[in-house]
Image (cartoon, rainbow, N blue to C red):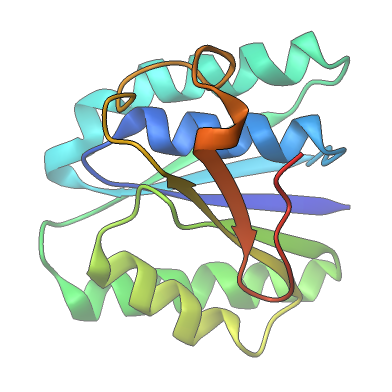
Length: 157
């Protein structure tokens, strides 16, 4: 079983496009956790819908869970992500961390707390030209997007 943890910041398309790229290269998570700060929580319904739609288009369904952390609360981010990684570690599955859209507090807490877990990939999608910021993955030239796994290698496919 794999679980996808996606950190949502101010750029919803970054989260969705990184998830899309991950699914295109073969990832089939059983669950997705979208973790965000309160200020970005109004984007959660459309993010949840997009993740489910992409998954269904690739022939699988999953549960999307959301976690909202108070704005700029580093201690709470650390505590919540610590508990999430501990819970997921007990299930003995792989974790893919999507940090592309995440804000620093969430990214730092997720990387620190995930280091003792079963994190298989830490994904970041680099957009090489800012003229394509708010477009779906398939509407951005592939050579302008680089999917990087910080635990080993480039996955641009």
